[in-house]
Image (tube, rainbow, N blue to C red; front, side, top):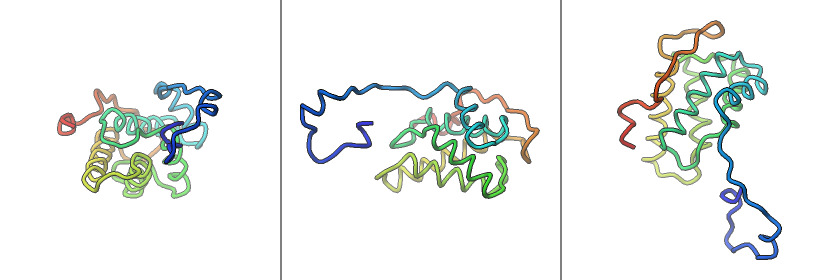
Length: 154
């Protein structure tokens, strides 16, 4: 991943001749849900909500680096350790999402951009988990667009 391995000096041509850079996109939504569910043991419906939040953040362009499936897995595993639920009213869930997604999407970011990213994360949690409480048997709410009208101007 050239973005993560950028150094102070340009790579030597001999080394670059032995490397191929491939641009890969994110997995489709269903695959991300299944990976998160499999790696964490979280219920499918809860994994789907986490994926919707992360995909919504990706779509918002309110980040320095796009959030990845790793962030989804980290959120899901941390929820299990903390015995928290994917619930907009669970302060532990909200904080886990904020901590993991904020750190995953920013390396240098300004205070203003980090603050905006956090606002978007909280809005997405509220939208994706709207009208739901408790874990387990919730239905996944359809969520057109994922971006709140206030964040569309980004």
